[in-house]
Image (cartoon, rainbow, N blue to C red):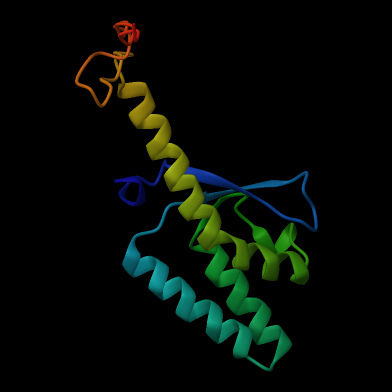
Length: 129
């Protein structure tokens, strides 16, 4: 349950500034829908200062590090970060789960479709006389 653990985060890098990394917490489905709705409202807002504040408020609820985004982001970076978060969270979730399941593997050989273990040698095919 990645979304229920506030310590579980993924990294988001910006195209506008690929050196900085933002830590973003995982979201539940409900939070993802609320995020999409709030982002759409910020995009639709015609007053620039209101729109920017809406983006900063939206990001503050998801970005865990750094804390005070208004001191480290330009308006363009706030826009880009808000756009990248949903896909970054989905990819981060897939990576974490893949890593988890790989670590749970005991390294046993997988059986082939013939029912023989993958490590078992297959007898040679009979030769025609």
